[in-house]
Image 1: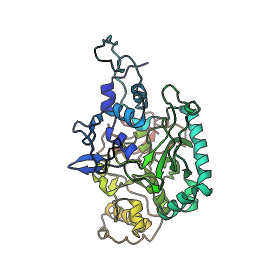
Image 2: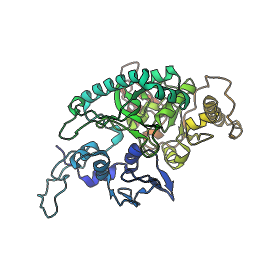
Image 3: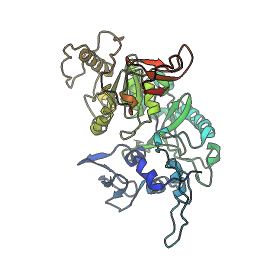
Image 4: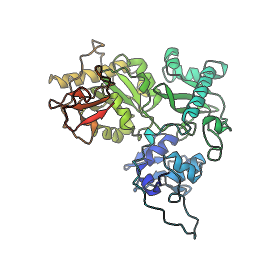
Length: 440
């Protein structure tokens, strides 16, 4: 067992993304993120991340702490459970001492690998995935039965989704706010997890390679969908946020990156013949490179995060010149734009046409107005030109467009860039060694 220094673990976990996963997107003021505190009756956002980025505090009830305290107070975990939830191992060096106690120094250990909550699979392993699949199937049955009538109407009327889309993405309905008190069925240790939280609401499963990675629930109260900060919940023990929609990628020339899962589903329904669509789950989430690499065939990434997430969207622009901001023209997000009468397919086509014009050095279309832009004449635009951005050998997202899948000649999966900046198979062309290689 490798010792994990909790100070290192705390520094590597994105506290903002962790809180946003529980409370939804924050309100921002003077560059700081605020939420309504879940620990008291808070109507004015008073919970904030401190300037150090590692701790939080509520100015209303004075609750405060770090990533571990958050998991202990919000999700009812012990300290040891919180460490494991964030990908660490509990050892003598990570367990807090009681005041006045003494602790033997632990032997030096190799520095831990960077903790990437986005890359961690379900903690309960195969058992968790099997149980989650059974839960998702149950929820799908409930959605299409009498108990799900109100939720189905919400998905139709408020979210714009058709029956076919709802079935394709496996959406469901949990009619009660009752937990599963047999965590062992989920592959979890009952000594660590007393129960598995299964809140009432619309069930949104995320799949990676055909297996459930996490399950998010758009929570409901007696009168319908709950407002911020109680909008979302999810069963404990699942994998951390991956790119939602990976299993629906088709290798199109452009991809749209949305913030919320239901926004991505609506955009896929309206414009999936033009672009691939994924979601990051929360505006502060940072998907692992392994997931971003699956978007390699897309020469353009349209970042369609909510309009209150411009700062986070700008960070995506630091990845590569292939990243372009696509702001919803009305409202705060993709769905609100649709509700206002916006034509999502025409909006996507407009951005693609504008990028094509820029790539060919011809005059771009006129700037977008608040009314929906005209639809592109063709639904099959020409392939995107390769990015001419400088190549950073430490950042694979700046490299020329990556290949996808195994080599058709030898079946190898390691690719490297030759002198002409083209990708070649390392197995077929071992003599090429540019120093830039990636495995897909």
